Every structure is written in C-alpha cells, then in structure tokens.
Image 1 (tube, helix red, strand yellow):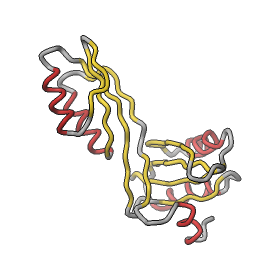
Image 2 (image 1 turned 60 degrees about the vertical axis):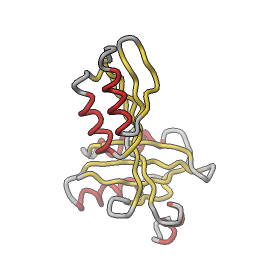
Image 3 (image 1 turned 180 degrees about the vertical axis):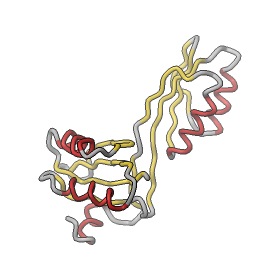
Image 4 (image 1 turned 90 degrees about the horizontal axis):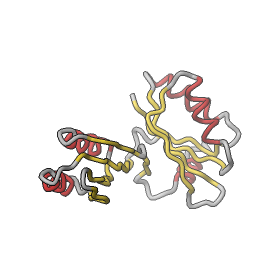
Length: 172
C-alpha cells in the first residue's frame, strides 16, 4: 500500500540522499519523491510516497527516518484530508490528422499543449495520479514517445502548516 509522508528537514546538502538510501537499504520502494523549499528559509519539505505491505513496515520506515539528525518532522498524510497533485509532460507522436484529436482530449483533461513539432506534440498536465494515468492511457493510441512525471506533492487541507501540525502532535 502507498503512504504519503510529508517530511520537514533541515535545508542541507545530502539530506535527500540519506533518506532515499535509508529507505532503499531497508528494502522498501519509493513510489515518488519531491523536495522543495518551504515558507521557512532553513526548512525543506519532501513529499515522499513509499510502498509498504502493512502498518508495521510503515512504522519502521517512519522510525528510521525520524532517527536522522536532519529530520524536523515526519507527518503521515495518507489518512488525513489532503490535496495531492502531480505534473506530467507527455510527448506524443502527432500526425497532422491526429492533432485535433490529441488537442480535444487535452482540453477534456484540462491539459495544455506546450510544444508542437511536425511529428509530435508535448502536453502539460497537472492533477491527481489517477488523472495523469487516465490521460496517458488515452494517449497510448497515438504513441507516447516520452514522458516525465514529477511524482506526487501534497498538502494537508487543515488551516495550519506542517510545522504547526507536527508541533500539535508533539512530533517537532
């Protein structure tokens, strides 16, 4: 099962490497990982989606991550009300005859064409993982040449920051 973990870490070189290495050494799979600066200059937020078999394995992953010196907080948002998005750029084979169909499907998915080449089109799509998957399925008949996906990023819907949530839950 996939679990969405929000990690708040000190903004230092090598932290992402430590986290990914720790998880892979334990034999768990990282489904997606994305890191970015936050509203606090010295804190980086990592959106980590990890695949584990059960709750015990999840607790093991969290406990191991929390032992790292650079970790400020680990928040499991899997069961929390949250918003998640993923960005994808998809390069599709596009004959002149297929362009209208590709553009029509892109419009339905609220995607946008960001580049056109005589033999291809690049479409930008933002949404939940299922939406990106569904769009890719629709583009298969045209031939997907290349695809890049950011992986999932997510925020709690609570009116507080992750730091405030961690403080409230005494994880900070």
